[in-house]
Length: 166
Image (cartoon, rainbow, N blue to C red; front, top):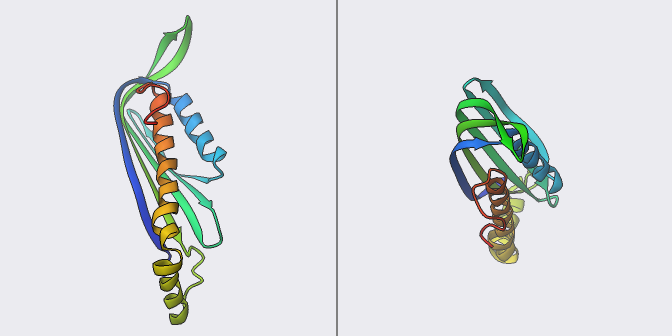
């Protein structure tokens, strides 16, 4: 049987204006590395005036469970400008963009539960033994991790006050 995917949350950030794309790119990549995700950039298309990025971070938390965070960035009317910030000239981007963030928890990603008895055992584990963890605790941890990424992105593009929703 295939691995069990539990979609946890999806967030979307939309904005039009001037922002530092290099800082955003670097900090988002650092966020994945700091949390131990194996980073993969699936799509990187830049056909001016449009930029499209798709990233996926995978972290194996146990031999049975892993977390996946996906990020899709799409910008339109992409135009590089030079802005003066604190008396220094800096390359910035003026664009309309959208960032979609999603996370999911995957159980049995190694596909070890493949016989009828093992499938019954897995179902029993999820319904009775690990129900609280598999359906509440682990997805909740993935949700708050994605909320953290969303808050940090908003700080990096200067659209919120520091500290976010907490």
